[in-house]
Length: 363
Ligand SMILES: NC(=O)c1ccc[n+]([C@@H]2O[C@H](COP(=O)([O-])OP(=O)(O)OC[C@H]3O[C@@H](n4cnc5c(N)ncnc54)[C@H](O)[C@@H]3O)[C@@H](O)[C@H]2O)c1
Image (cartoon, rainbow, N blue to C red):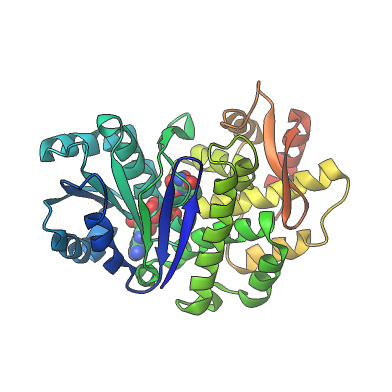
């Protein structure tokens, strides 16, 4: 079992990873101050049949009342409707200011449950129990929220968990395309911050099977969390360096919104967004990275899909302009002068449109 700490200006919390990590949750809850009064697990209808009974059995060792509320799965469910249903359930169960919400699931559940916790009675505590590879990213850093049909993650609050309890055993039931989705964020962490981690991944993970369910996967999770934690520690509220975590996300979020939430996985959209950002980087810096074609081929080998040519460049651009990072209508993207080094640059519309046309036409 590994334990690392996320330390920001406003909060410090442990991230516990490894087989059997769930056992840590009972002492953690019993030691919390002020004392916890009740627990509500929020999960989705894929994860609950697999893990809810184990988790509630463990939680009941605290002798606290344990409630649960299950929402439908899929990113389209990170919605006002489910936010409201969670708040209603919390009120009906009689949760008070000292209750704790447990987010049991992937990034969708984590973002939704975190937002519920961050706003219920003006904010109560919550714990992340991630069950997807992607959630190595989403469970750390305190960004919570829901989607609006006009834009992804547009409504939310910064609200850190009390702890992240991450048992990689849960990933054994995760479909391959969801492993691929989560691995896109691992690749992102390497590309923006750690050249040698990128080289390690590129050399050792030639297919998703190479990732396996053992040491290599756990290494990818731990290293990805470390990079995320370092960045969040430096810039909790995204006034600077944290924006670099959005590499691949400007187009990625636009793809998710344009195709309809849940149609493509988050990671598949981010992978396409990373390739597009590399193209834009080549134009802005006047030269491609040596690794550009290597990354392109690698992502194809790993099975990341190509964008449907039917997508409209103009509509994607209009979505990109609604991104939270856009400023006075100008798109800002994270670009890479080199692997392991990223920066935010404004990108003019004519360049974006030209490159979007080429990107969508490329096969
Ligand atoms: N808050 C942040 O900092 C942050 C960062 C990155 C991504 N995100 C968000 O995370 C979300 C994507 O997260 P995700 O990819 O985990 O999606 P997800 O939570 O929708 O999970 C993907 C699918 O896998 C299923 N699933 C989850 N765990 C399982 C398991 N152990 N076994 C079998 N099936 C399982 C889910 O039911 C779902 O169908 C997006 O909404 C994205 O915006 C947030």
